[in-house]
Length: 507
Image 1 (cartoon, one colour):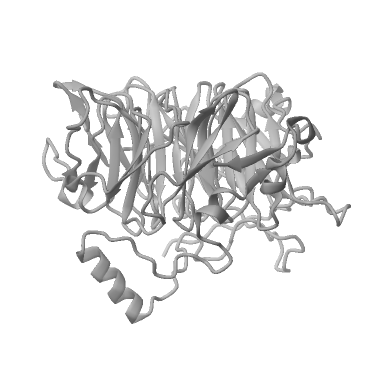
Image 2 (cartoon, rainbow, N blue to C red; image 1 turned 60 degrees about the vertical axis):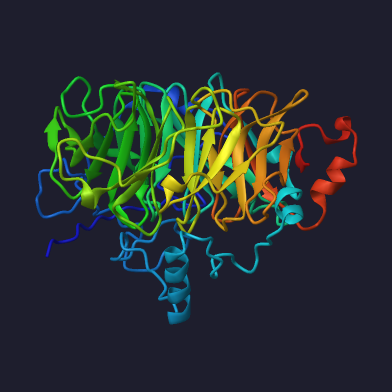
């Protein structure tokens, strides 16, 4: 049994999430602190890193937030118990298990088994027409464009990455403790330079202790969020066996924090297991690939860029991938890959209604993993059964305001599975995200978030509290909240001059 490292680290009372962060300036969304040379220099590799010389410690021996045997006075963001990397799972009732098993046998039919909490309302009017955003929930990046964003799985922590390789952390529900009547707003917590190139994707581990980024420098990095230090690198530029082009996406497996998948413009998928030993070069730890699938997607015997690679929930071996050359989705099962030229478990059929092939910009899954959603360049979001991709799409989501004009446009499914958000909405001079109701048989039940951005909206993501975050080419980051008090309806009745800097949803 490997021992657990102990550390005595004192947490500052400045950060509401319990992060060990320095004092921050009051300018919201700024990047002034990371431009300083003293903040860009990384500290030595911690003992919790696999690059450490001690063999007694595991990779996931993180810093102890308590520091003393006494209980902390402040609320701590991350769970520091011994079972940190084994998220507790509530036992399912026999009746629920039978229903899920029956639904899986019937072709992955939509499961409505208790995965919609009682405090979340389902329905097109409540989900689609009640979103709004206050001026205090709009953050502007300084002299750079945000490329991607991602919410933490258990907290209101939002990570935004930019074209210059900067990584910013925001609190989407910041409360001013000095003013008890104030409403929660978005506020910047911390930021650092994660890469020297553009970052295309950011993803949190299931327990929110790790943060992974993929970049145009042909590598991905894994950071310890408590110390903001890079503990390992996924890839080595210019070496055989790694990615040879930009890494488009990196994703943790929700049911196994050690498993990671990355995809690249070179047409390959690489699977990583952080329990394996890596190598240390010039004081930097590099993880070794476990499995690489070359030519995961190709067109006319040519490699094409793999745009997405996501794990199916409740599995540790199945990944769905997409590419930029056509609308084909492929389901890979690691248990069935034993040959030099591996084949997918299943794939979607080719397009028969169009004369040309449209690439897929983004892929996401439903919370139960029974549905896969793919945003296509033909301005349509397709819904598939995850276990029967060969049957073709189950439903198509269309809206005349949806314009998926680039591969930076992303799609995301809400935690309750009832709402689908996609960037690329354009109406007159307004730009925003498009919301679709997945619980209705009518796939045209949609709404648009207007008034929040001045240019094209690209990436979107949901929090565990049904908050929606969106980024735009105007450098803005918006947080949207659902309301049951008619806030969005009141905004729709006012003049534009009266609601300047406000955003709301409308059909």
